[in-house]
Length: 210
Image (cartoon, rainbow, N blue to C red):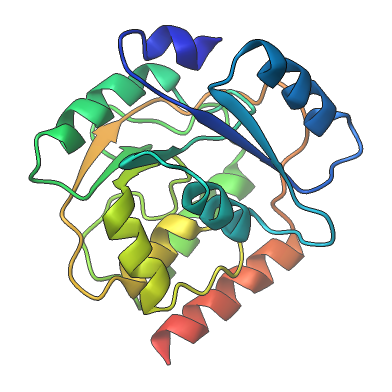
């Protein structure tokens, strides 16, 4: 509902990618889709992972421009129209919602998570082909054709930082702009950040570095 309100006047579709979660997400989305054909459910059984979920969801879209946004309300959906306006201008491939650009923020993160984010951002410089303030962002919009070129070039799909993967893999430098936003508190659910996620991030960096 929040996205629909933010994108009033824009022709959009929304694909929920669900890794067969036990909380009834897929059933709830299918019920929603019966009343609104712009909504679809992509349920994956036997496969898990945020990056691959994003990849499959974007490949399933027929839109010339696609966006990645979490379903836990931490990302600011009010930024979507401005992102779309900038992409439509024709001079950009990607618009990133940035927590670290001027006037952006990380909300009420505790110091340990903030420290992990800062370390991960510094490590990303090993493989990054752009001077992004927030390469760890999970909130961005990209032209579909630019995204497909990155996938064909060998996006790893490892871990949960798909934006960094795209920038590190793109065969040509992606034209981008960052828009600041304030990271909000999670409405429901739990963070996926754990030692396994951290290890997957290191594996992805090594893959791109090599």
